[in-house]
Image (tube, rainbow, N blue to C red):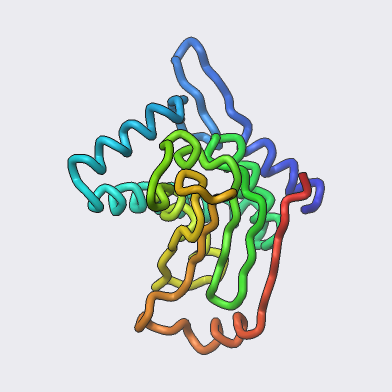
Length: 198
């Protein structure tokens, strides 16, 4: 990432606290600091009441946030993929979502490996992955990265389910419309990988 791009990303994602208003703002958007355990309790209660329907709500919420971020971040970094991933890591770390270790694209397939998932850590032991909000978040980010809709995100490994990290895979939905011919030519044989420097 160039120095100028790094400064743009850094200044955009600096949390600003206004104690007089009781507000925390990041990139012009208000945030609320909530303990991980509180969010995990909300998710557990939603699951108890709604069953698997709670997953859809959390995925949609994560998708909405991820889509807004992906649009903003693309503008900040001028469409440069490595800078986009570095900015994504900065945002995820500063907002407490997770620590993004690696992002890999292979055509329309995107994989993300993350440490310290806010919900994976706080949820407690689970028989199945629990990072539904992050699934939606990374789905939206992947759509921007590969310039395509008709994708789905699965969590392949989860800290709450005994995994060492949380790992997500975004792939085309079976039977979904294929991307345009121009987009397909761009993606064919294109494999990129970004790893955290820290």
